[in-house]
Length: 126
Image (tube, rainbow, N blue to C red):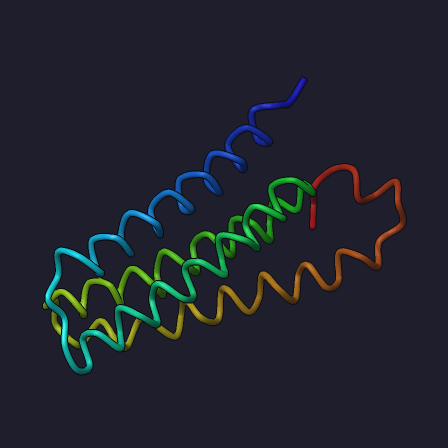
């Protein structure tokens, strides 16, 4: 039986995956974006999608710390870009790199999680 943290991790992956498809569909059909706003939207969607794949992988392999770091990173990175694309103040652009750094940290954490002995990996600490 899965524990509550495993269920939460999988639900985070599912929610973010659903969100990127829904947001992408709205972007393609409802929003009339042009120029830099369209570029921001495309970048947000691209990074959001790649992060969803990573987050799903991390949830299945119980790499919780890396999963939470990636999740927060994509929310900050893509969330700010989505907001700016839809008219929010461009000052949010100053926050975007924080999300990017969190996403990079999650990949680094995944890289180093493979160096732990097998009995230490089972706890989902990576």
